[in-house]
Length: 517
Image 1 (cartoon, rainbow, N blue to C red):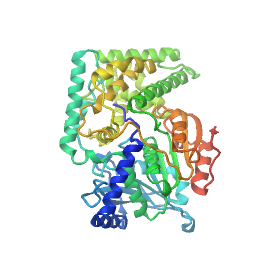
Image 2 (cartoon, rainbow, N blue to C red; image 1 turned 60 degrees about the horizontal axis):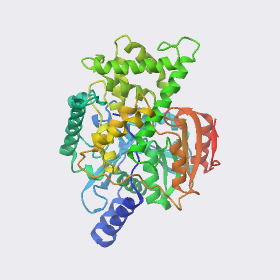
Image 3 (tube, helix red, strand yellow; image 1 turned 120 degrees about the vertical axis):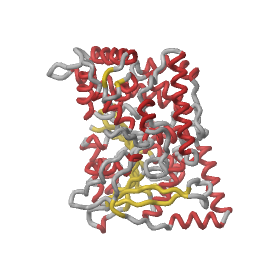
């Protein structure tokens, strides 16, 4: 399944949660005292350990240029924000202290890299070079949101079970296959409830937004300076709605459409990934050297479709002892479309798969699903499902999906079935979804820079304009990047970098409607 970025809570749901929190703090002196205590906690920053399995494993982050070390800490937050005097959970944080003139330091710039389910503890160091200029005036800070990694990470199935789960036939063709898919999803969801039932009701985006407001206070900032990517734009929008007077300078990149429900979001992704595949095929066919996977863009796509159809009947050798199934190949192809930098790997993977070798496509699929070379899975997919299902009110039966298949197939002959059947993942989830979509209206907030990429497969370009409008006429400032891949700032486009850096570092707001390049 894809790591989906989907819309969340409505105004009513957010307002009700805010009201219950205020009532708990205002009507119970002990609760008010506890909430105040948490905002006054002191973080103990230490050298970062190696990431654990839930975060993806690997080595401790390497020192920054100049020898500065990454530091990690743990923040206490209420498990249930409507009961702030109750149990707490640990929220894992990481930072790189500002490296410029201390007198010019603005504060902490908090990053969320999306998913939902991605570990900020592992992602920020991996991309720190991209944000080196921002570190001249900010501490760069990220975190594992609740339910992710070391922050009360959601646990579902074990590694061996997940190997089977991600190999399953996720696009059933008959009643027997549909029955098996439902059985597999029920087993996965049941394992999540068994292993993380206490956490599941408290991993909504509104909960994470409240954690960020507590984080702002604990970090010592009057305002939240924020850089949200993909799902991180939705989290940032919900934060701006709940705390408009606490928003500092904020950038939303690879923007979620906050007006869509789960079905509309999945359908939009089908169109987005198809567009990215079309662009990949056109690029390959236009090269001076012959495209090794097709004579024309149409031929490239036709051969991919045939490969997937063949794999549905007869998987090929993957990374031993696993075979490359249709589902694994589809997720591997999708993973490669997140960045134009991955296109050469997709070309190589397809060329080898046509010769019966599925190792490259399987490696791409493993990357999508959070599996490392040792066969251990991070909890990115478990957290992704838990957050999506806690946020999204809609529940889709197999009958619902079958009715919607024609629209999804029209949107994408290759990804349509895959994304349509993915909507059934929350059908028997243990926790009710909160709402149809999030409310991000942020009247009174300062300008928020919203960046849309015209070739983005996962968060289609149109979502940026919808987000800018939903934030408010005097809040959302739209910038367009005419490029490929998921996001704009990490593309290294000089126009995008210039506008974002000027805004975050100097407070210079670009003219809404600016286009790069």
